[in-house]
Amino acid sequence: MDTIPEPFSLRNPSCHRSPGRGGFRVPFGLKDGRVWAPGEVAKGKACGCVCPGCAAPLTAKAQESRRKRPHFAHLIDSGCATGRETGIHLRAKQLIAERMILAIPAWDGDLIDMPNPPFARDAEGRIHRGRAIEWPATRARLRDVVVEKSLGAYQPDVRARDDAGDLLIEIRVTHAVDDSKVRRVQADRQRMIEIDLSGIDRNTPHDPIAFEHAVLFEPVNRTWISCPDAVADWAASKLALDNFVAARNREIAEQRDRRAKIVHSRHQRRLEHNTDKERRKAHVREVKRAIHAEDLAQLGELTRADRVEQIRHAYQLGAAARVDALAASVSPAVRAACTRAHRDAWIYGVDPVLWQLLTYDHFVARQRPGYHFNQKDVASWVLRSFQHDQVLYRLFKAQYVHRAEAIRAGIRKRRMDYWVFTDEENQRIPNFYAPINDFIGRLEGAGAIRRLWYPVGECEVASPPHPNGNSFNSARASLQVG
Image (tube, rainbow, N blue to C red):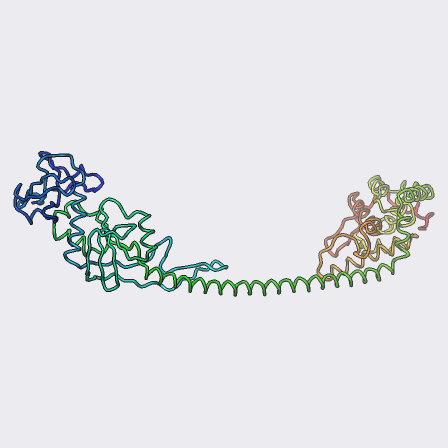
């Protein structure tokens, strides 16, 4: 019965030493220029073999043991560390030369340098794959096998011929084929495979049948170092793929160019349309401004701050007596509401306090509690009753009509401006409805009226409108509007 194998590593020879008396286990012995397995020679020292590594005498051991694998050991422990690896290397070459049959691996490219099938990305990032190279594994009959024959710049372990031509074979026990040899072999377009024995189980070299299989037929421990025909086939596939991708990239470039031209054309048409639209808009604006040209020419002078202040002062002086008489007849709350005014309240051609007191008289003081009126009625009455500035009113009316048209068109518009006028002109034009709306709000705050929810602008006279009874009516009798 075999003992439990110890961990195997060809890079750590110490693991192969016998647990008993010193003596390095060597799977193969060298005799008469051949490499022998322990079962192929006489027992013990009579085997006549030497170590393949150090040439020291060996003894054949455990040939009939049920507990140990047959092996060779040094007669004298010399600390040899190469006998095992050298023996494996020599025995592998000898097997190939004698059996003249070998499993040839499949060629499947290289994941980094030669992916099979080749692939490439086009200008849009799509991956395209070329034709896959079919190069299956085979079992070849060898002829003209030569071991360790120099080819000038390099010397392969085995050189042979098969149906495809020359074949170079490298046996890897400790070190892989170095890069310089790989480059030279590939440059010479030689076929070369490597059989990797560096990872075989520690007991495999002591089992002739298993070792022979590992060397000659195991499919997973061999790979191509150089396979010129497969590489050429792959290169042809890659070239065809690159040509296809190049053609595809030209199509992509042409499509992008066409799209860019379409976008540019649309942009140009849009610019031309916008330019034409702006030109038409400018023309319309010029025509519409011409309608208001005379009024706009006077706007700056009419709304000059010092002029407005002079007008307010003159209105106040002219209406002082009437204002005092009317103000005396109303409640303090109503009086406070009427003696304050909106900043544009001067536009009606009369002292703001006077037109507010008279408006209160007409729509509230003369009416019974519960009487309804609308803010639009108040605006119409004020505009009819007093001599407002016609120039400013026409400009305001243009603003108002434009906003109404925008609202009917579904545009939410709160500002009272007109696109035909400049921003400065729109700001200078007084709002003829704002002072009245402001005044109605102050009357509601004084308790004289209350505004209703519906219809818009509807108001109702509160009860009582003021605490002095009919005193306002007596003062009203001697005063007439404008």
